[in-house]
Image (cartoon, rainbow, N blue to C red; front, side, top):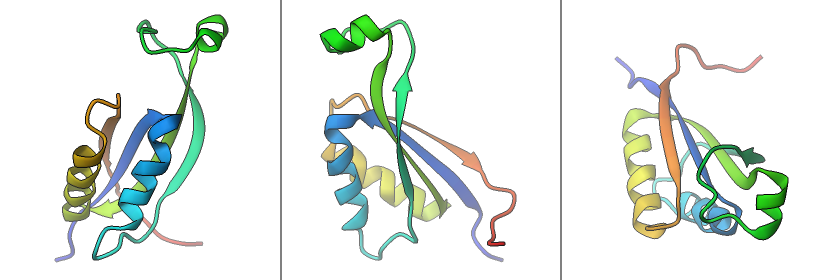
Length: 102
């Protein structure tokens, strides 16, 4: 039986996004790939927001999505946690019911 797939989502401040990407690209064995994009964070905690973000009412973030085997999710998270301590990085996983190419 093949290992279950998970979607890993990581949301981080823009200033640490490149470190996280580099961390994931340096993993051995390598990950199959992932997607990153810009996003805005909305919420009640603006304690780490810049003056511009306070005015805009949202905080700039980068998002990373990857569909990975469960063991790769654990490996990726361990590497990101080791390199981004205290950087206000959040993550979650979701089960992937189907994955393919059209």
